[in-house]
Length: 331
Image 1 (tube, helix red, strand yellow):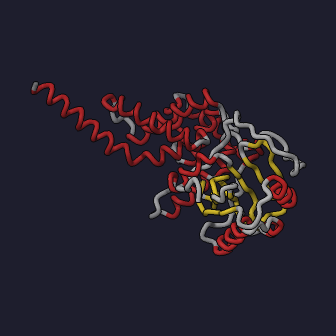
Image 2: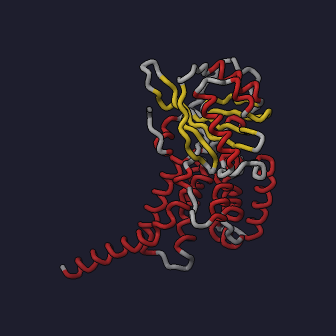
Image 3: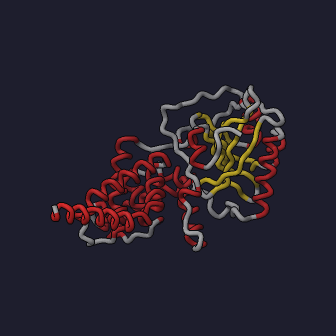
């Protein structure tokens, strides 16, 4: 009995050690899995799988690498398996040309595994380190995560580990069981591909910019007042508007205004806008008034804002995202 008790106590202590040592890496592993998969739901599942595998193998961890590196190795392999099984997650603009008919009814494609936004509160960086916050925001912007989805899985891993997490080429090579030369070659190809889909970095307004806050307040008010024509003043002329799960997407302020007027046709008071934050970008939970007078979750808008106005609106109709952003199902 003493031996059994001793073994049980040792197991409990080992479990406590693992939890205490591994838990601090959970958030950054979630961000890593999100960049890899483009789905916050999948990322949460894969982080759970990562910790389960790590816990089961913790007794065999010899410490030849850091615990952080070991956890990243497990998470990356879990993600690669998931990508093989599920494929990439696109945005509508990654599937074809923009639509030229805003009044034509749009048809959802729920069978497509669309890219998902991620809450800042989930992926947030250390608030005490402004440089870390900026880097985290840049590497989780929707445009960047969407661009990653165009890369083959191994190139995606290499670019994230090298350019986002700043791993050495030799470390990445060890994780992928390949050569340093192969890693450098994959990184070069990944960077070249990413150049074609790179997000606007220098143009994007900072979240603390008073002009951006004013623009967002006017933007929300325009929707709530049903001043759809007034949105033209807040849009860039070449604004991109896309809205998963609908594959149609639109370019140009006039086309977007026509789309909203034809497809949504809100009246004053029909819409309520609740501010949120996603992927280091401003966002809104849009609530639409139903026949019973209750404003219910309708869409989540993630915006790219420049000094010239709203440049890109990613509008997600998946209302299961609302709880992740701390948004209610109805108002």
